Amino acid sequence: MTSAASWASCGAMALTGDADGAPLVPAANAADQIGWALRPFGLDAGVLAERAAIRGLTRSGLHSCGGGTRLLPAADGWVALTLSRPDDVAALPAVFEVEPERFSRGPADVGEAAPWDEVAQLIAERPAEEVAARTRLLGVPAGIVGAGSGAFTTEQRGPGRARGSEPPPPPRIVDLTSLWAGPLAASCLQLLGAEVIKVEDERRPDGARRGHPGFYDLLNAGKRSVALDLAAAGDQARLLALVMAADIVITSGRATALHRLGLDPDAYLAGGTDRTWVAITAHGWADDRVGFGDDVAATAGLVAWHPDGRPRFAGDAIADPIGGARAAAAARAAWHRGGRWFIDASLGGAAADTLDAVQATARAAAGPPWTIDGEPVARPEGRIAAGPAAELGADTDAVLAER
Image (cartoon, rainbow, N blue to C red; front, side):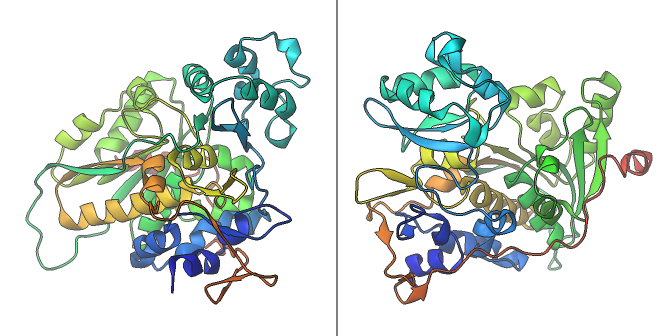
């Protein structure tokens, strides 16, 4: 099967291109790479499209499937901008250095309801680099399409105990992540028998809890739930104890945020023999940019360039499942090999690794009915959750009592 046929069969192609046009194949082999990464977990590249299947999302060209991100022309290039949080909409006057009255809608208007017409006009008047610099300064998720991202890397920090011929026991994982990529990575390892403890701030729990319950359950069913007040010194100490007792730690916060909680990957890795820290970030551990799956993928260059010269989103928040799958595969390999490992799981880097330098313009399906290289363009399909996820903090007392 060709890479294009794999993209079609996994459901992601149905999410790429204009709503009233042919589905597109970007210049990438994402479906093949992720299918390979997920095979040890009994999964396949259909994971790339399962959120869209569960939520009923469809392709929308220059608008992301989820509605919170858009591809917008600047004076000299293209910018991907996400406005899915009230704080990001509230920051727009500062981003563009204009009065708040310039915008017809306020911070409560996010996603499709954000003031996109005014934003599009302001971006069109400015160089892309200026927009990228201002959004980065103010912590708004955005990037120049194709500008690049930090690399996805795996670094061994020290040797481990000698492994026999038998596989190692299932690890205990502390999951400090939210939304999609991190929970996906932890849930993949859980499929192989890992015990996963999901730790959330009781004041600001995983935002995905407010989303589609079927998708949240899919990624979090079977995990033990611990809720802590991470602004309190006592609970920060409890968090540190949980982390130091774990075999694998998976995070999705930037370095500065984790350091404020007293968490340090170097100290964790120095505290034991066989342990792995998986740092999932938008663009890399050393990069302070914020980002979500759609704008990160576009910044990394994973878009479908239409023959009309304009980019289209590739799939649904595609950097999230690509990065989550890569992180799971890297963590599994590190645990089986033994030793101390730091996995810099840059979502943008994972997306960039799928790019095909040979093919520049997207290929379009023939039809309808839509096909490419003899393969029908499949509709996205979602897995069924193993059960409901635990309520917030359901296992706090039991887990803390075990320490």
